[in-house]
Image 1 (cartoon, rainbow, N blue to C red):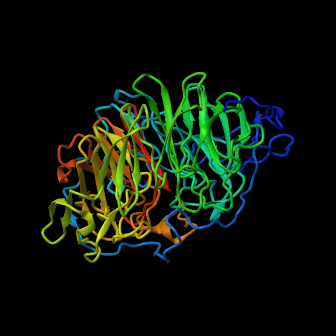
Image 2: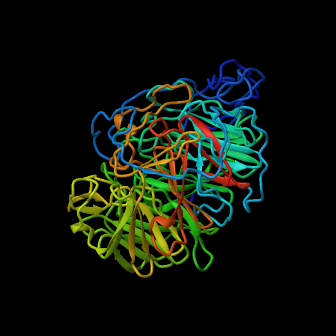
Image 3: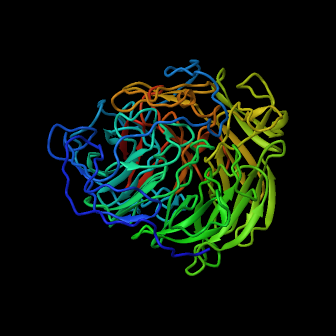
Length: 638
């Protein structure tokens, strides 16, 4: 379906340069008018820092603001994809003390709460200069580089270039271009729910905020703050080096020059309906001159095939107008991924299906063309059963789909035709390596049926496999994922497992392997690291000022048992980066011949165990890895 329908309610904002006191307040600039669901040309200026004592890592204590709505809208939402809240997990502390003593990291340095006077980064040639969007330069979440870091620690100040406080929590990734980083957070001091998001441009050399947008105000269901199942900040900014696009997943987006200044345009899109929880796991995708979005279609968009369904659609990056709509719908849980078919056709893989009564059918996958003149055309459709709560990772040869227990399977499809080539079991003939805390050794259970394998971590119960949501990625002939742990959301036998594991399935042979990972990594300056295995952990979740953030109790858990929407993993060369709620990143060898303990290359942390929370993924450019927690943004060197 294509269209260039008129944009309803377009208006031009008078050119004003409003320099108002108070950071990130978003006072209106000019004559305010009603919002609409179309694009609007805009000249509202961003918040820019002036000299002073410094706040939130910016270069000054006062900010200028203009344009945009102010304030926040609170409201209540329904439970997220994990079901109803499981109780009142404590806001701090760690349950259990079992663990392993480690050797620590290679570097050492004095502890520093915030390196405000950090010298400019000496950026080695990392083979990659920019990270333009969530999925990296080409949107596949895979990049061929050789010098990405394997171990770092904010808690112990090891391999850290700088770290700077953020105004509030944000769950999206970090876009990088030239000397600037781009990310989004809630406004400072936000309540437990909000419709407001702020975009920030950050100096890559120091971590200081260079400028911020006015408040981007959404619509529909107010987003819970620090929600384990996404929030209004979950969509990563996009940049092409000249412009940056910021997104409020609650229903607003806009385009700004990378140097700051007036918005080129802003527009609303349909926010989340109150009938559903706030689970919006799409990541906007830049393809040529088009930004690929996912939402219901609104005023000024082409008429949808089915009202109330969500569709991928292309938005002209310089006007904000919708220029094409996909033939097939998608669910808001799904992270679509673009790529290139073997014949050179650019395409995007996306899916339907999920809990809470999402309406789009048929459940399963679609491959949609991005070729000029054929944008949005369905190339093939694969009906199946299961949920689309995954990153739709694929390559030029195969696409993939998981089916749930009691016959959990990885379906392997021909990427060109959508025909199923293989159906590999996730639980039969599996090699499983558990960590024995008594002997401090891994124990191999070779060729076992996981349905009949006793779970040594949770009382010897039987298990089934549920790949943890959003944690999957295809690399080097394998489909990799983390495992949901001790959860009964999917059908028996038993609960989900193996506990706290990384898994992989060989696309050609069906060989399936699981390796238990430590749940916690405890570090402090001049102390050996402690690896905590087989324990359910909790954490605080605060902003840089110590304000408690979460809307509900599940956000204080480790995200394994109440399966959080962990960030989509990335591949840097032959290293896979899995980041989780506790601020830990597991670095796994994508070339490992055997999935054993030698495949764990290292661990990164974004702060002390039990005091760190984050659901944003890392980015890499110029030889430096960029990451962030709910408190601060961090630059990491190899």
